[in-house]
Length: 109
Image 1 (cartoon, rainbow, N blue to C red):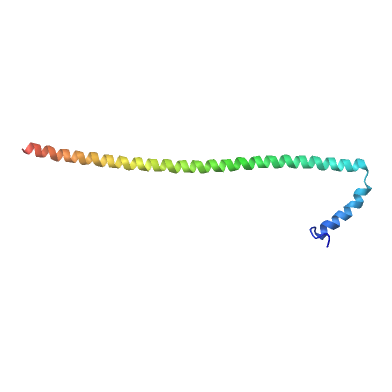
Image 2: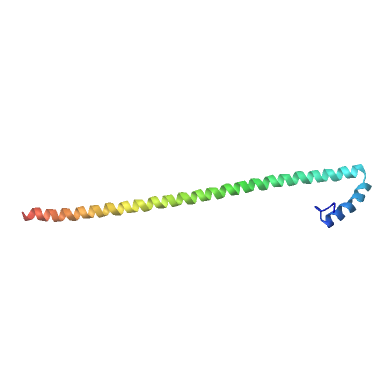
């Protein structure tokens, strides 16, 4: 089969459209071509708009990911600061307790 790549229905549509196109005058054919050209331009503009929106959405998703990572890092910083504060308070209490017992030993002498 010479038309393997095309479906049978497409071939029938093409062959039935050819006689109709051949009956049209040059002016009518040019008007059809002009309308198709305008439609192509409109579709290209729409594609460009959608590509722009898609790029913006991808950028927004990257920013959201970056914000999530930053949030996790900040959370870790706060956890580490909390641990450091707990250790500091434990040391202060220990030193305070040692100081109180040390004073009692000093007074006993």
